Image 1 (cartoon, rainbow, N blue to C red):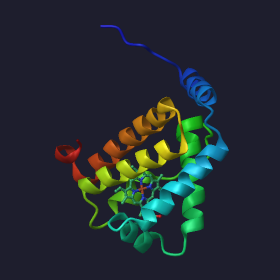
Image 2 (tube, rainbow, N blue to C red):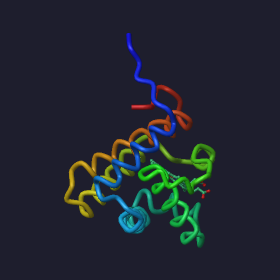
Image 3 (spheres, rainbow, N blue to C red):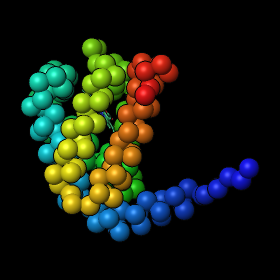
Image 4 (tube, protein in one colour):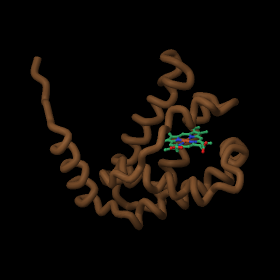
Length: 144
Ligand code: HEM
């Protein structure tokens, strides 16, 4: 069996090259995060979960999520938070809520980008992160 071993620097360069090729920039990420969370807040099931937790701290939350997505999608390196404890502390969130979250995220991407590759690029990353959050929150049996 052969493994492809890449250095961290090579991985970073690959992320930056992919983002540049797909035209993913700070402006796109800012619009994506603003549009997505406006829809989350208006959603009958997800809205109350987020609004109860975030209250009047939405500006800070949106800024943090822009840093997060710029780091994930463009290697911006600005996010240094801890997503797992931010989610394991939430009460009443189910694995089905992740299906709704991912569906809204895909819809938002499809509305904002004509590029299927860009949609896939973000969705692959969101699905991978959702899987690890679900693993931490619900254990192995609810991961897929
Ligand atoms: C149904 C699914 C989800 C719910 C209900 C949810 C809810 C929340 C809430 C309420 C917070 C704020 C916590 C706080 O400020 O104390 C938060 C933070 C966050 N969420 Fe989610 N989330 C979900 C899925 C996701 C997914 C799939 C991602 C990534 C792809 C994500 C990324 C983040 C990040 C990066 C933070 C900031 C964590 C920090 O404080 O550094 N969330 N989420």
